[in-house]
Each structure stands twice: as structure tokens, then as C-alpha cells.
Length: 322
Image (cartoon, rainbow, N blue to C red; front, side, top):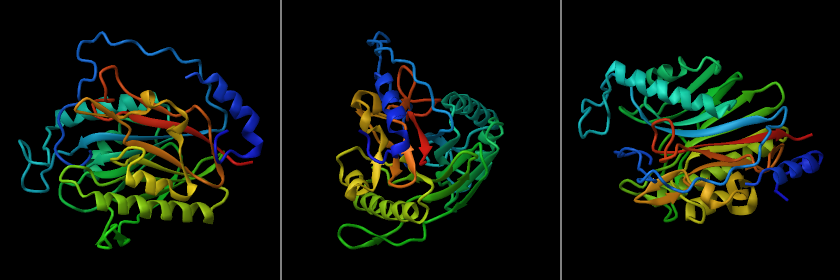
């Protein structure tokens, strides 16, 4: 039986489980080909999954370096971190991402690696179903930030000013904004957190651990303050289950990694030197929401990545408590 499952949904959602058979800041290479011969074994077909009525579908997607056409850092293009796409190149990237996001059929999408409001606007303009969008801008030139797209009205606040402590006691901050998003959905109140923890490029594992430790505290505190809300943390957390940062998030059992009911072969989101890693995650906080068992998916293309990104997109369905 899945944790955090309200009594009113147990029978229906357990039936759904039976029916369901079944980084990164830094210079990236093109999405890695995880099936170079093109003749890899096809996955076993899944049993049909029907999304429950009244559910909220939340997705998280690192779109991979969505830069605008203005050079903010004075060092752009070539081998520099800040890319400088032409207007046509930005439009092509936004077109491909928008088509991929549409296929997720999500109500809210938590994004990573969006440079500016102009970059977000280019994507948002191609997604008319999402009437609302917000950027968690850090203000650094050429930064890749978190953002959110939502079908429903939203309000946001940030947590980047919070002082965090590494395991050695030294202070640090969130490397990107931890964007708190309040969603006014008609069937459920939801509070979502868009996260993108410190990458392993020029690694600072103590900072990533500090981000996870603080995020657990922030998300759990908000869930306790809003016991009627679905509270979800999602994004590119740049580490795998069993690592110290992910263990820190899961400490005390306040947060459920919803992919934990799916086999590892289905939950990976990133290929590093042929190593398939689950580094993009969705967590449900204990409180007023229920994860629909078996609904987690890592959406990727046959050769890895999704929508031109080097990351898969992840999504899951949630229901309010009754």
C-alpha cells in the first residue's frame, strides 16, 4: 500500500495500481544516444491507464539551456556558457519543446534551465492551454532558472534568500530559486515547488546536500500549514536515490518519492556516459493529497531525452484528500 493514501481513495487507487502493469548548470553535450544501433529491444507494452477524474497532473522538465537572443554576460556563443541563439534557432527550440510539453497532458509543468522572461515568453506563446506562467529569476547574467507553466491561476514566492548550511557547517544558498507556486485548481488546492539543485559540474556536493535538507524543511512546513492542499516538490535534483542529498529529502518520511512504485528501468531521466540515472524527481508531502499509484512516468524519446532536451520529462497524477 502506498504511503500518504487517504482512506477514501484506497480501494479505487489500489485498483488503478493493479491495472498499471507496468545537469544541470554547465556546458552540456547533445542528448546522449542510449540506443546507438536503433535495434534495442522494445519495452513491454503497458496496460491502459486512465487518469482519475479530478486529478491534478504535475510534470517536471529540464528543457536544456533555453536562452534568449540577447547577450547578458558579455561572453556568449561558442565555448562560452551563455548561448546566443538566432531568432530562428530560439523559435525552433521553443516549437519542439512546446510540442513535447503538450503531449504530457499536464496541468502544471515545473521547468528548469530557462534563462529569462523573454525565453519563457517564447515557449509560453506556443502553449495557449497554459494561461499562466512565472519565472524564478535569480538576476545573474546568463543564468538558467526555474519556471512554471500552469493551466490554472497561480501566485508565487521564492526562498533563495534563506541561508543554508553544508554538512561542514559552512553557509551557502540555493543555487537557483526554490520557487513556491500556489495553484488555484477548481478541484484541488495545490502548492508546488520548482527546484533545480546544484549540478555536478565543478561539483559542490555539500551545497546540493544543504539544498535538499532545507527543501525538506520548507516543503514539510508548508504542508503542515496547509493540511488541505496537495503539496509537491519537483525538478532536476541532480542526484540519484540513495545519495546523501536524496536521503536528506526523504529523512523522517515526510516526503514520498512517487517513482518508488515503478521499476528502476522506467524511472531514469538522464544518461551520463551510458549510465542511466534518475535525477529528475517528484515528491509528495505528507498531508492533504494522494499520489495515484502507478501514474508516475518518465517521458522520453526512443534514443533518450525529450523534446530536444538531454533529460526526460517526469509526471504523475495527484488527488486531494477527502
